Length: 417
Image (cartoon, rainbow, N blue to C red; front, side, top):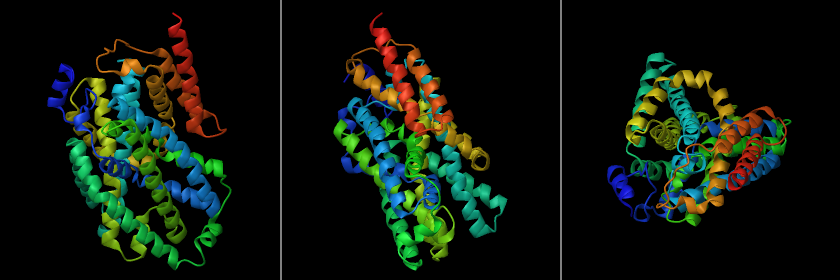
């Protein structure tokens, strides 16, 4: 272990400033629980509602499989790179975008993750305040503060705290949510195929696959922040792909069944209808918590890279901003966050290409002297524009293709200088 790594490791058990050493890697089960908990995101249920409204049952399954495969390839590659190098998303960005060029990707991930963190808090506080306190605004804001403090605390204490939360929350959410979903289906008229057919609309399977991928592609870009703790690249890739597919599929199914059964978009609504109030509160809170602490953890790493500060105070800053703006974000910013989701896949594909095209530069002993890789920066900007403007195909893939072409051309130009 180099002197630099030793000093960073002694100061920060989350290795914000250096690669995770082999002796600090986690078991495959732990990585699976962390990654599965990351995907337990209530906003993904909104997509499940859209899929159930626009597709019949077989189209729904087709969209899940197609979107899941694309998302799995993307996040699996990021999981592999993170585990092989031991580097966070921001450290990888320093290699592919340059030290100062990495500020762009760090700002993008921090901004979106703080936004989703705030939205998640409101998604917990608002329905609970409505159910328990008759929609009292005072109760709503008190719940926002309580949730914000708890979720910020788990992110503040880093990977160990994230592991504890995941081990508690993942089994409970998966089991209780699945039981509620099965109970709801059994009370419906006819088979699940019949229930889907009643609500099927005009959404295509390709369009549905785009929604599936877009629902978690921004969070998926932060995969190296967690997969870097896996014992090997193979382990990082496998746990990421399997966990993301299972977790996302569960969320989409919860949202779809909620829409079919009660016209809502959250398993919370289903559990309330089934008179499972306290279980509903537990599932809603834990479901949001497992994603929110991961989101804030990523935001803290990103801000630490930009402002050259320690991760922990940046997690606190991110948590305060997200908590204070929570209700406003929920009512005013979800559509903007969905637009921003399309801007992050170009970042991820450049991180992957940067590693595979320049593996030798990712060794610890190789000093990074690159300040800004303008081809990488331009690739992200053009990819984001194309992803948000071009209506053909799947937005995330369009953005990645443009960014990849720009970056590859740039490496060829730089090689010939």
